[in-house]
Image 1 (cartoon, rainbow, N blue to C red):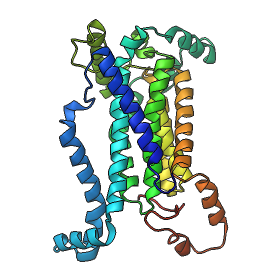
Image 2: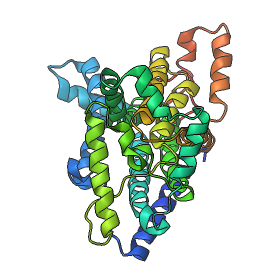
Image 3: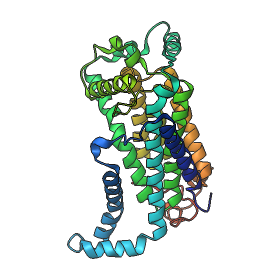
Length: 361
């Protein structure tokens, strides 16, 4: 695995893809593109990859030749910095991430068919009441934080998750010379989808907003409102006749993957020693997402606990699988030494031993 840090990621991606394809065949349900509104995958994915590569090549090309001689600068940058190995690593990271995500979304859509709509919302709701001393956590937040301005702020944070995660993946894959860093992050994100799928099947729930929608009628109308309504319509359509529906079912509570993925991003940035501003931003975004999941009724408290556990396990397994175990300790030891920062920053090469100080920014 240390020779090729994507070994484990590829195995995980193949395993969940086989599970999704086998389920599709067994149930007689087609595999669906979960983000079809952005265009077909064979157009969307190459475009996304092109944008990521451009983000890594164009700044370097401008630095070399200036804007007026951009084409020649691009040629120089590609020749000097973009080996087949580096391109292959980046492509592998993107493909494994996408394979895990698409398989996860389809297996999530098959959940009502497999589990016959058996739900454990009542048990988790009782646990919420016990934790909040006989109150519903969301209603407590509505009373303390209000239902207007706070709703719009938390809605923005919750919806921002959708584009930010692929963007951070692209940044770590493309902008790091230490290729094992991108492999670690891609592996961790892929594990989120796999472990999240297992948690959905182990304890199926729909969440407070779908179990008790009357608790959230006082909230201002936001983008989250539209998203929840869309997911509800899709759920009803799939439950009515899964074999006739063209929609994908996207409602599942335990565990919260918004929580797990944002926790993964924050913990990963902490363990890889990213710049302080990035680490702070990641933790703030995680806390906002955590608050939004309860505020809007997406999840129970147990879902958040499960999400944090999945995030921690994903980062830890990803570190081991990509050869980065103990990176945080090594980085802290080097920081505490008297070595000049300039020497520390030049201790790694593309694909060589991990450099704890590397950053995508």
